Length: 268
Image 1: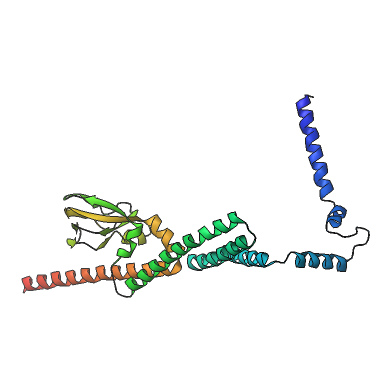
Image 2: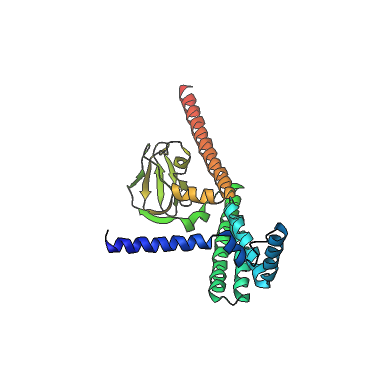
């Protein structure tokens, strides 16, 4: 047997022996300050209580509360309460770091506080704007921070009926034509949102650029990410898109009524 293998085997044996020796109940009891030959439940309880009381400090109390809030973040199902719990936990851990003179801990959790506060503010702002949109303000410009810019020239086709749908668009400048219903779309309008709601994610119409313009786009994956981060946002977004769908239906009904009236007049 090679000497190298023997050395490794010998080292592993010593490690296992040391681990076994350290895990012996008798040695653990001795390290706790108990007599292995005279162990009772009262003695164990009293010793644990003594250790607990001995280690109670103002700093450790802050660490314990911070740990409680950290565990709470793991149980949260939505982002807003998670951020709040995380901020409170970070504050307690920062105080623990300061009181225990642990600079690394203090700086780490002090830095996490404004980051969580910024994300919480963004989420609350997003939910608030979504709520306003659902209550009647049909502007969806509050999604702009999550969107990317794209430009089109006259004659460009943005997408065709039946194409796979992967993104939603918000017009900024220019004019666009929905060819199937001959409806012109100007700045500030939403396009492609229905593809997000269809089971197979297919385009429900063909849109062509009839005047050079700029749009902002957001992928459906990004929308789903925002949707699942906060149920309130998801609810208000669904209300918003439903209202837009009803508007489209109402417009089509009016067009059909106009065409029927024109047909009746021609027959008469």
